[in-house]
Image (tube, rainbow, N blue to C red; front, side):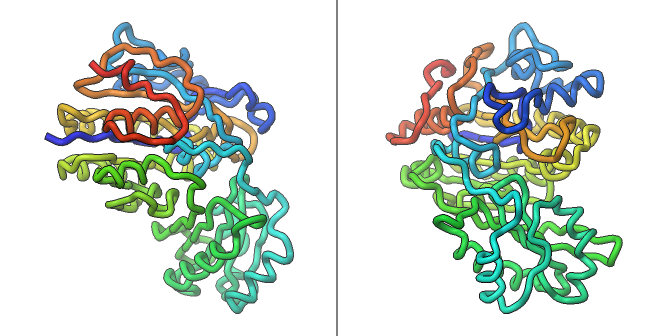
Length: 390
């Protein structure tokens, strides 16, 4: 019988604007609530059974009299609303200053330095949607061999290249060059390889994306778990987000359902420790593309896999479902939104119908996991383990 904490991050599944959302241009954002309202109600019966609708009267999501899990929501204590910030905070790291963003593209000196180091020119250098910029500049890229560099509202330096023009290993090497450059005053949270294939007018991105992150500034959840002799099994882009720190096993995934499959595979291995998964499709395919119907279907698809996840839990396992930020597809623009994230906790040894309220930070999740494994630590956060254990 194994003992595991299983954290599943539903990437961008926010549940309502934080009090400071107006400072980020996100007043009125509510990813799940607004989707539900627009479509006349979402039926997510398995997450509802755990207490999703009891958190904060999410429009269209039913509350239940006796939820099978503990439920609540987490405020974001860090400054920012991106992937790195959210995941780092779950692991116990609070960022007092937001990571650098480049709303007008990268400075001339950064681009010049990068071009010199890779030995060729770049094109792009602006804020753009990844799918749109390859439509716009893909043909020029194929003709010239110049990589496409772009950014977003997040702290990212993204490099897109056709796999037959710049090979995937060569693209990864360019990303490593950029990662080594973009530190200190120039820093970005992530450098991202964005390979694509296809013909002009029909380019598609491939699953060979790779993220190159900064190291977290302090020791965090994954490192404490590894040092305590526990397995840390990373699913999806978790390994990249934490720059491999503390990760003992990792698998990258093609989509949400592949992510769920790999979570279940790790559960079947019966290793003690932490399974930490990110399901990115909500954000990447639907939130950023303002695709309300697609987002709703992705939520339903995950909800339909919940029984399979629960069936594979051992007696001492604890499942935590949460998110890292919002990305409300009903709002103007395509950026992340500054939102509360859901907190659902379930296990055979976890009390039912416990309202965990509004937590001060995502850090409480990491703190609780370490408490569950009796690991001494110095991370931020307040454990809620005593409130939920039977």
